[in-house]
Image (cartoon, rainbow, N blue to C red; front, top):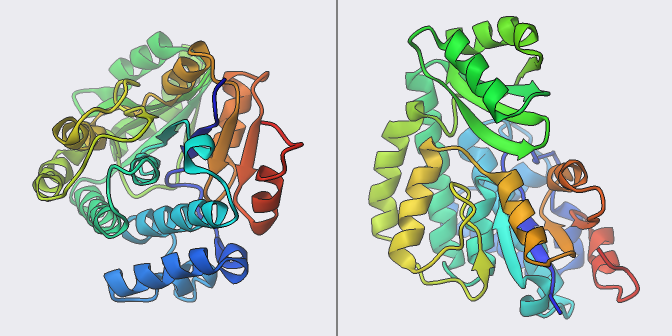
Length: 315
């Protein structure tokens, strides 16, 4: 009855060499990287394939790199005969990946999306530099336990839930001091805290300057209603027309990502076939923790292209 739910990764899925084998095997994927290099004015493709200057850890580079690699893989699938409406009967993306989902659903053109993602990365990096901050993955515990930890560790500083990834894994964001206190106090709340190697407190009020500036760029970007259901990170509801998409993407910079809720909504609506399109296997791993009965086809390499198009293979 249903086609696949396409899900697209965000920051943290990058690796040196990502997309290279797909670009070598697919003219459509190679063209995506070529166009990206032209739009950005530097060789993003070389950064993805070789990372000679160790730039993939920079937020302003990571975001366009992951977006472009994901789009290249998507276009390679379409080039090989995958019908977009079956490849993506519905979709979602984790944080940055929401832009990829909107591109694949026809809401925004490639060049506009790439410029947005590049600017988003720059603005978030600048906000992080201005306010020393970070993120902590909280292992174990539910939303109430994590909120209690945040209230205890904040001491008047910013510390909030930022990513609801899967049962037993909630990421919090805040000032450096508040994050340090959260790690130390975690065991008293029955959880464990692990600092993440990120530039700053993404999806928190500390990103407000980035959200405001991005809102101006979003206002000048053409967006249309997606051709299929695409869920917004901030509330796991379906995107509508352009103005509401812009508002949701602006909110996303400072508000929590409701990934677990999004996946559970798809499953509740009857979807049972998922495909992760983009570098890495982060979302495939989260899916196992959200619902072990739901398998996900992962397409991050050229081998994945063939597996995903094999009719004998089902997610």
